[in-house]
Amino acid sequence: MARYHIETYGCTSNRGESQEIERALRDGGHHPADGPGEADVAILNTCTVVEKTERNMLRRAEELDEETPGDLVITGCMALAQGEQFREEGVDAEILHWDDVPQHVLNGECPTVTPDTETVLDGVVGILPIARGCMSDCSYCITKKATGQIESPSVEENVEKARALVHAGAKEIRITGQDTGVYGWDRNQGESLLPELLDRICTEIDGEFRVRVGMANPKGVHGVREELARVFAEHDELYNFLHAPVQSGSDDVLADMRRQHAVAEYVEVVETFDDHLDYWTLSTDFIVGFPSETDRDFQQSMALLRETRPEKINVTRFSKRPGTDAADMKGLGGQTKKDRSKAMTDLKMDVTGEAYESMIGRESEVLLVEDGTDESLVGYDEAYRQVVIADAEERGLEVGDVVDCEITSHNTVYAFGEPV
Ligand code: SF4
Image 1: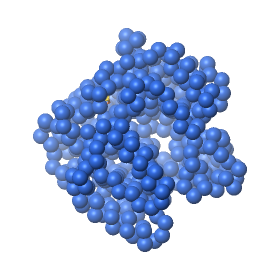
Image 2: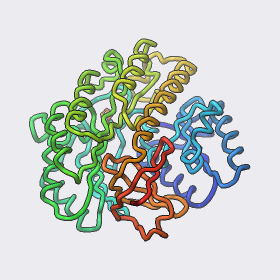
Image 3: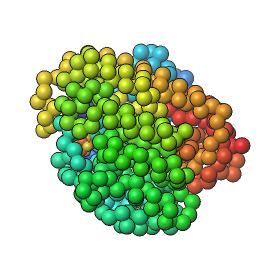
């Protein structure tokens, strides 16, 4: 499990965000480090209220970049509004929205969601864990020891839970699990029931709602890719969003990671979704600096990123977790990992920046799901790209509304929209 160091600046709202991050990390079995020098990941939750604060944030980011042997994650208001300043100063960090920090810290492991499969309603967002456990045994993962083999409730049970969430006021259902792609493998002779579940949620439940499908490893999705992509294309309720973490562009490294999929299978999944959907978001994760990753392997990961151009990318620098098989492998030097992480993060910013740039001028239907900073509201468009609408109260908007928006600008992490 990761040791984390978190520093928070600014208002009580920002402190609340840090508490949420810490809660998610502790739920995932991670624990605080004795300072940044001992941390696998250092998190800087920034504020940008005045210029002097900005200078302090930049200075602190540079210090943390030096002090921590692990990853540096910068989040908070300055990261989101002026993230490019950190890059211009040469700080090697992941710039992330608060909500994306826990997932990043998992070192490539699948998220440890709630220990059982109970639903949670948080405002207009309903969390629906559809199964527990996975069908893999990744060599770097310790989550598996806690969650075990997949255990899937029936499709009927999950549809009923989704229905209850919608009746209780959920406008967005987030389907979660260690690996949603293998949902039902234990009930259906090793074939995913995810397409059937999504189809039935969309056809059998009355009401206005959207559904976001959480992390699905490429192996599980590959077997049902045609069927799954067709279900996405048929139902407007589904956000056109797939989070399929590939982790490496090298089959040799994937074998050492015991990931079960080949690079070509991941590419086939992407191509199938491209064939069925005009506007969608591919989200993927890469681990850089895995112990057996050669320079050639790393270049293959870079090439895969350039080829498939995911709109959302999580780059994690490998760090050893005690008790895992990968921890016993002879590791790469810290500088090599840092250099590779920086190179891939730079490429990621180019790729995602291009995706957001192409959204400008686009008209989208945005579902508003939560409060943002300074009177704004935060929502998601049809492809689950985050859109912020300023002065929402003045415009008579509230959480739960669906708003027709024109995308006017972006900051590489999310877009800004104007109601039309
Ligand atoms: S799929 Fe791999 S990383 Fe995810 S929980 Fe299972 S063993 Fe861990």
